[in-house]
Length: 169
Image (cartoon, rainbow, N blue to C red; front, side, top):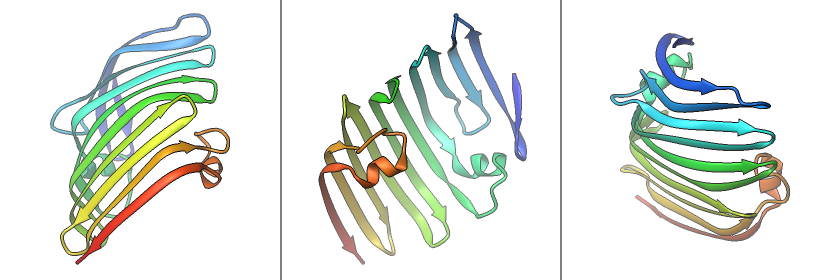
């Protein structure tokens, strides 16, 4: 139940069952990536799945060290995600908030990201700021990827509406 990752350890606990053709993890708890644990559950069976993850505080510097990455990175992340998958179809939502972000030329930056899918349509809202550069906002609605939403190439041919708003300092 302790997992070694890169340059450190995390404590991963959960109740795992193996139904025919699948895996189920209930009561998932990951300690060691922030002040408070990541909590969640996962269920995958016969091409269908459901994943839930929640954490009010992931320490990016700690995660960065655990993964053995070299470029300096720090900040805090809150995560709330709940997705259901069936084949190539995904339905659900995720919200990610990042604050005190330090990475290369970004100092004290922040980001708010919301992703939601319903059927074949997706919406994305991303807002970021950095005191020296300004802020940017991107809102995409009724986005329909040209293929699997899991393939980057599908998003290159996506249709829908996107609005971009920025302010530079």
